[in-house]
Image (cartoon, rainbow, N blue to C red):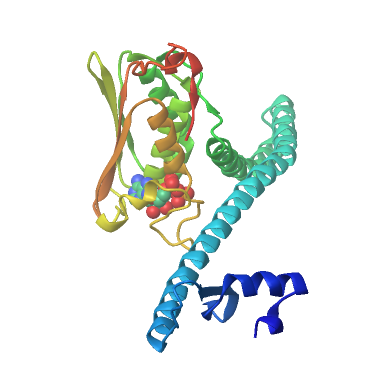
Amino acid sequence: MIRSFARSEAHVGMLEKLGLRSYMCVPLEVRGDVLGTITFLSAESKRRYEPDDLSLAEALSYRASLAIDNSRLYGEAQEAIRDRDEFLSIASHELKTPITTLQIQVQGILRRIQNVGETAAANGLAERMVAPERQIQRLTHLIDDLLDISRITAGRLDLHIEEVDFAAVVRDVSARLEETLARSGCALTVRAAGVEIGQWDRLRLDQVVTNLLSNAVKYGSGRPIEVSLTGDPEKVRLEVKDQGIGIEPENQARIFERFERAVSGHHYGGLGLGLWIVRQIVDGLDGRLAVESEPGKGSVFSVEIPRARRLVPDDLSGTSRESGGVLAS
Ligand code: ADP
């Protein structure tokens, strides 16, 4: 028997020296594929394997096969995620270039139309440019979200911390979304008078307010929206309240994850990235993001952000997270 599987005379000699008495060989089988075998050998003990030993060996090989299969599947899943993220990063950069060119050209045309003055032809042309301009804005927004997701996933969402007036940001965003609000029929009440100063990233705060307010419009069923900003010496609190479709309790945690949506794509367009990005920014500023919602009644998204980030001592250099200003996800 040894001769039947030995590879050479020397191999036969070695195997004979082992003094083999008995052996079992069981396949490592997974979903119809044989990954390999496990061989059990007995020598000095002079023990002979019995049918019970074979059953035990088979049970062991079954469990080992499952473990190997799981680790392989896990590896493949990780690789697929890496491929997806790399694709997202390349695709969003590629998409950004033509859309930026298009945007510049449309803005140029609109400027030239304005220069012509208030003629009927110019007004007609300007009206016809509204739809393309809106679609370009929409595309830009989607591509920016895709770019953000690849940056954040790669741990490269830089926060540029400076002194910012959060109340001014809220008022700016509300003014910018005036046209969108008017189109949706949602009346907006803003309670953000005065100043709310803190150490934040102006553009990222703008993005937080824009995303939450845009969602309130999108899912707000044309009903009134309220935005309020309040503060105490340590922190500020932003609330965006709508009276729209609301969110089922079982979906309320999931919607903050990447690509997660609680509505059908047929009724509401979107990639399911906005809230994930908001959460990453709020986390990066040591804040908290929460939702309270009742289906059919509406939602309140709230963000609480400290006026300055906590100083976390760095064991190695003694510097703080403040100095790095980089959000690693
Ligand atoms: P998107 O709007 O592109 O789907 P978001 O990440 O902004 O992506 O939102 C994720 C999901 O959370 C949405 O698909 C929707 O189901 C739900 N959602 C967000 N904001 C609201 C809101 N104000 N009212 C009801 N549902 C909301």
